[in-house]
Length: 183
Image (tube, rainbow, N blue to C red):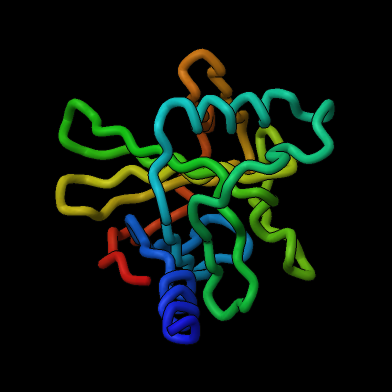
């Protein structure tokens, strides 16, 4: 009986994590161009969790790591890479025009695992943050474009628990699509 209970418990804990939402995108107007990204959001954060993540970002250099012990709420997988980036912030917000703005923050800068880091030609403002912000804008049919914090300024609103990109660069992510959420 104990063996059966142990086996049942193993199966419960070994179950794959379900994906709440999934997206694909392609890099553009940057190096590397044409790189496919697969984004998996395991959980959309509630206001309290987002506020904690933003407070960790705002602490910046005063914190040992920007995110301390915050839970991973998803992953970004570059095409052809066995290594992904953990998401520590995931927020979606419907817009008045029927579109949806999605903001994600990785635990490390995108491209930091590559021999040659990701870059944009002639950046107006170079971003050296120890994380990356991904902002996607999807229309009502689930497709759109996006941007990355490779250049420009990241704005943190601790009171609202919000992260936004203040960037005038061309779109760095094209072919953004919502995909079927699978484990």
